[in-house]
Length: 119
Image 1 (cartoon, rainbow, N blue to C red):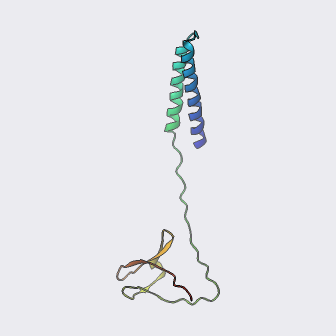
Image 2: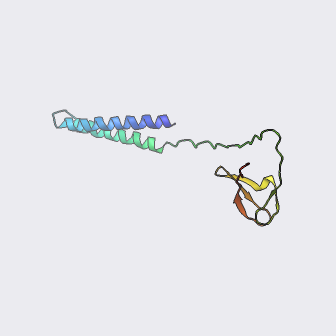
Image 3: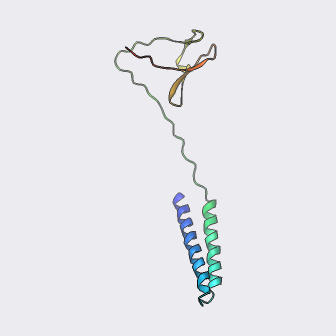
């Protein structure tokens, strides 16, 4: 659909240029130059209007799935809220703009998870 719009714009532009040249040529003695030039301009306008009115299909929605691959034996600690100490579950962690964000179901505090250095 997008290629059709581009082709229609190009054809409309070329017809408008030829229309302009025919109108200029009418001053040099070309018969019916003004009439042909105006006709080419009108056809060019029709092509450009049709190209403008064509709708492009909506872009597809892309879903991104983030999978975490943990190496070897990993001991899972319980996540606790920084504010109230309530136990947090996996449903309380969401990815927002590429960063894990936790919302406590008890006190409704929201904060970003940060990984502490292992040394």
